[in-house]
Length: 198
Figure 1 (cartoon, one colour):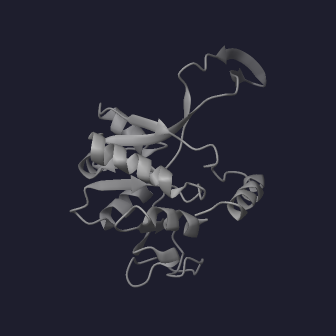
Figure 2 (cartoon, rainbow, N blue to C red):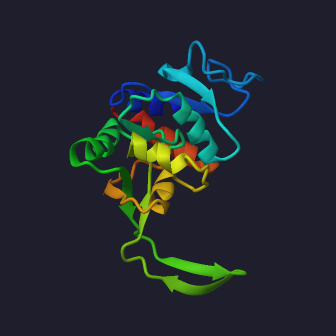
Figure 3 (spheres, helix red, strand yellow):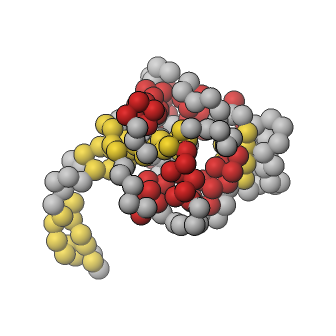
């Protein structure tokens, strides 16, 4: 999965930093030692660094490895291996050409949403204007670095940008860009990957 994500990012980005859990070696396999970020990196990335306890900590570890002169930084979850290079291009171009500080891909919510408590429905949620959010997410580098400066926590980096009061732009997401969360998701992703042009 990580190899596909790196390949898609590589087609758009000047450099790719991979953040892995502690205990992964330079080949990307669990090796019992921390990744130093030095020497070779797996899956064709330029550099590998060890992440932190939370997602935000891991992003900050990756940010520290991004060159200071980078103008645009893209954050992507390898758990979304089907993100096409065109989706990377869409978020990057919205920052580069339109001057956006933060751009995220979204899909409109199509399912009925209900709030529950103790196994009972409490209310039906109006889905008008609701979207689901994907990665890759692109940022003006200074905006992303500022968003992470105080060590905040959130489920995605755009959330930290929102907390700063900075506008977050959206582009259409891709229904095929599914997130591998459950075991059964892996089989679906493998089937899609088998027929997906790169």
